[in-house]
Image (cartoon, rainbow, N blue to C red; front, side, top):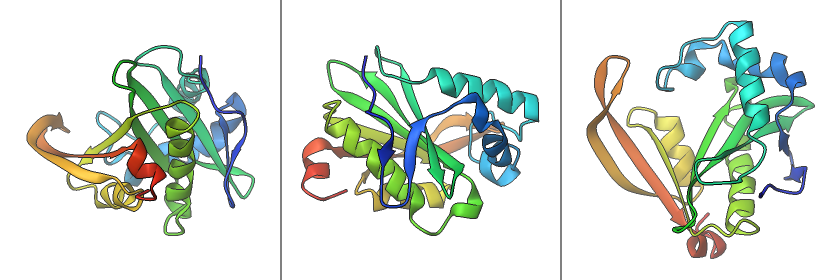
Length: 186
């Protein structure tokens, strides 16, 4: 079982496991159409749906086996302003997938980059990952910019590769290697 020593801290943020007490803050972004716009199959959530989501995220507290997800609440100004996650894709290949979601009220200040960077530091450092990738809808420019700010390179544009809201959609794939991250690419 692997997880960071909590909390992970950055100059402005604290990252820790999600708890049931985070419901109000999580629901504040999960109910927003502009936040769920790019999430496959997602729609704005009612409070009880967010309660179930928070319970699921709270259970994603460690990487025990391939396919597990580690989800961390991002705390800034004494509130949960977002979440970052690593999904362990392969033990043999030492790979994971990065994910993130933030309340738009906290955008434009580099907080998402700071939080995702802290999780990548742990993933490449203590957990020993070789490669981390991330994906987004090709029209999700803020997400693509975040991946680029992290030093991830765009490796692919999968043309009409998945169904998104009833239409075929393009997907962008970004990635970074451990040695690139350590050398300062990230």
